[in-house]
Length: 248
Length: 310
Image 1 (cartoon, rainbow over the protein chains, first blue to last red):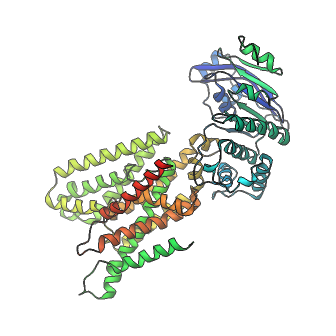
Image 2: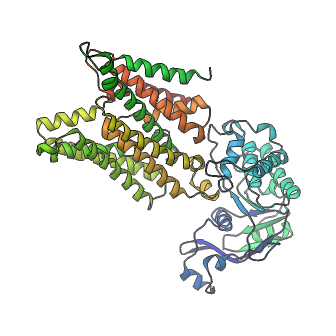
Image 3: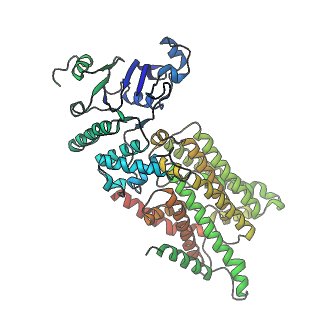
């Protein structure tokens, strides 16, 4: 569904990680781990085409060819037609729970590109929202003000927005941050179920390795020395990334 | 219960028509059509315009206390008025209310244009807010410098404009304010979904496909058009822009601008009418700027205390 080849991430002259290559398959749930400051959020933003491009001088240093900036760092391939990126949606961390928005209004607002100039969504989008709320088990919260939701419930409302927007690849930056244990496990299980049932590929960053590892198919790790590690075996990759780790 | 706010607004409107503006020697019709109706219409348009501007600014800067005054737009208008009355005022032909109004209008646009220009470099809402406050202080300081060099007549005219008033507007001026209000509102409603998404932060808005720059420019254009025109004819009027959108959110129970903008119009008009009634029930009318402060400041304090408790 999503294929990334030889991508570099960084800010200005600082390269955080280079030679990032991976593939995400339909319905996969993958954890992006790594210590603070290694570029997890930057990678997610780059994938969502948010982060700034690395200057050409640095690109030259890396021996990159003269391609357009997007081609330089990311090559996306979809299953349907090569060269067309799938719908990639990033849900950032710390979205404020603004008072005066019902879950329904919040999702409609998030569908900015999918709505008309008045903010009205089509019947098709409305139907997708219904399905997403049903899928996530928050249909009864539809008319609730988002400021009254628990953090776990709000995270599910954010997920519902991504699904309503027809996300083929859903990127989540620290979706379990600030959640208590119960909500953390609930959200992680929901991610797993959403990926399986809807076929959406999910890549999320988290520091909660213990809980996250219970639900993911694979793990990607960004190391302090700028390496990007990926493996089918969770244990192998953790040993490669953190040699001092003794138990999982 | 649902129609209570609308009935309240209608009651204020009728009550305002009954107070002030005219003497017993004047014919009732003349008092009504030449003095009171223009004053009430001016209050409704000015209150609505300032409230709609405040609602947009509070969304764009994600600050519950943002309004046209905070962003220096009124300060710009004040400087324009000061220049007109004190520098150009030495020429008798230029020394008129219209000159003051046009100069205030240009000053408001200059302030808004500066904020929009700075927004091209600094995208942070907080930085822009600080810039707006500083801009207001600079304009205020420049106005004070000009006052020192002004004559007695110029100062009188300037202070009369600064005090704020809904009285004395001609129908042509009211039409001009109404046109500015309509254009400003069209811009605001077209920008409605942008104002909604920006409440969740610039990052979320951008990730959702919105252009935060477009949202900011459209809202500032709308605000400076409405505020500049109203300030030019009524003087710098504070507090409506801050308080009215909060009351609107409380009444509608929503923060979506499809509901907040029209309701802010009504609550802004209601506040302006209430202030006008309070200004005109006395034998000698009080400045509207002062009565608005008397109504607005307690409401702002209540809002702040409620937020603190929340």
